[in-house]
Amino acid sequence: MEKKHVICDIDGVLLQDNAIIPGSDAFVERLQREGRRFLLLTNYPSQTPQDLTNRLRAAGLEVPVECVYTSAMATAAFLERQEGRKAYVIGEGGLTNALYEIGFTLTDIDPDVVVVGETQAFNWSMIQKASYFIMNGARFIATNPDVAGPKGHPACGALCAPIERITGKSPFYVGKPNAWMMRAALNTLDSHTENTVIVGDNMSTDILAGVQAGLETILVLSGYSRREDLERFPYQPNHVFERAADIDVI
Image (cartoon, rainbow, N blue to C red; front, side):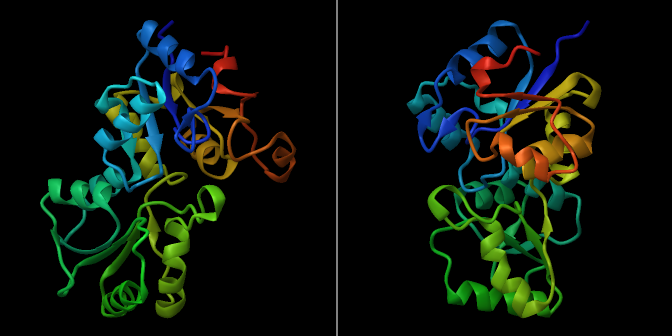
């Protein structure tokens, strides 16, 4: 039987902040030793794949850069298939680099799309410009629907909220749990739903993404979701483990 391929979240599964979650290095090493195709899939759009591999290496995880895929990359892949090549972008290097690579012009003059990622520099002027462009016909795209990160750090969904209120328009969120993100990940892995599992710590993004895409799902309890949260959801993961090191079904 063909070995299962693995799509795995980063934060809450492998890392907590910038520290390794005990045993996650052994989990990644096992995937590599067994020759499994795997992809680290994150909704976090601000860092480039090289930035993320450097972050993982600093924590003690050696992962090839081609094994990392972000919501910024998925957003660029989505926009590459859409009309228009001018974007007003609220975001950082991971997002702007991904858009530059597909030939986008980043501008605040008559953009075709407004693209929101995450940035600590978010301000009144960004809200006003994004709202004005959207009210005048620019399409509203966002990298991921997460509202908050660790310690209440505002995430993409929170940055989109005032723009939504002003314009009355909701963005198209590309990242998990959107099926586009999962299809992009499967294409990158050259894999199929029936032989791929997703490992994540969040019922509302990772596990929902897997359920909607038809993947086998593994929830780990080392990050966002807790065992007592499971009863709140109409869908359930196929497997639940305390941490990635405990996974014994792949």
